[in-house]
Length: 129
Image 1: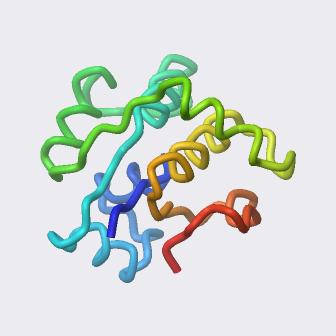
Image 2 (image 1 turned 135 degrees about the vertical axis):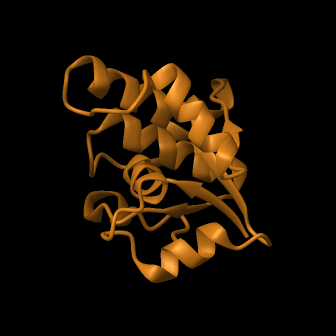
């Protein structure tokens, strides 16, 4: 299975946060699964870091790629084809980071891992359940 981690899931996983369900933790750790972290999540975390809303032990441009590599997660880029997927998403949720992550899941046929109820409302996206 090819998984795309929502930003909060990535952060919960790398920090060992107990809010991450055991099922999600097992699927993310399963070596048979290919796990992706989007540059969109790195962008979102960096903005929140700059605003003082998200602390890290190191600057995010060092810490986040280091954590992604440490856990053998692949990086997922964004391109015009990703943006083109926006037309498929109804306006149920306005968070641009979440919407772009869903576009990447659609474009690349990925299973999105999230606990965000607003994101889970999108029936056209495949979610880990």
